[in-house]
Amino acid sequence: MAKRRQNRRELRATDTPIVGILTGSPSDLPVVNEAHDVLVSLGVPSEVHAMSAHRTPDLVVDYVTSARARGLEVLIACAGMAAHLAGVVAAHTTLPVIGVPLAAGSLGGFDALLSTVQMPPGVPVAAVGVDGTRNAGFLAARILALGHPELTPRIEAALAADRKRYGKPPPARAKKPAKRAKRK
Ligand code: RP5
Image (cartoon, rainbow, N blue to C red; front, side, top):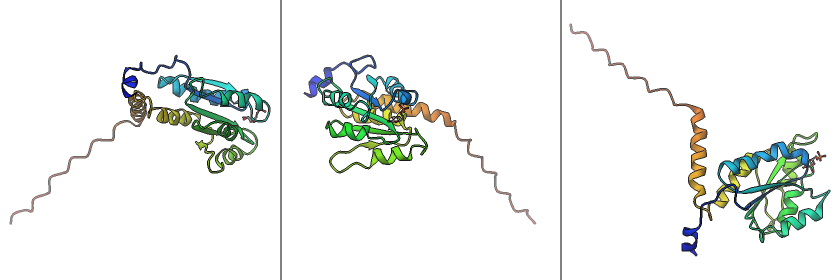
């Protein structure tokens, strides 16, 4: 098993998806595509689909119950308002599910945050912050890195690149020599 892993080709973003990114409405796609962008930047193959726990429940169940057999290893579920998508996804699979509450509607995402995060024991959703689609991508990559070790240096490189935005700290000021007491 370990040997087979060693011989395995490294993951590329163009491979068969191993992350499924779902969202409750096509209107969510601009923010949801940021999860996909992060995964592409880390070379993790993923796919994005709009499907709703309320409007297209059968589609959600079909997608999630066949996900593992299609090679998906982590699911990201995003939704705004009465955000039940991540919970419904978690109810139909034992794959890890990352929930992203979205800031849609009049309550600024607080409604979606509570709907996403307050899951009953045994059916966990690992929720990130409101509109936290980029972090959902990074969290998916960290989970996947346990079985795809080539992802760890890519994640570290992304963090190092981000740190560059902060610039270098100013050089420490040289200490002035202490004044000598005058001789009398
Ligand atoms: C949620 O309702 C969706 O995830 C979306 O954030 C929100 C509004 O959906 P639309 O009415 O724009 O389709 O289920």
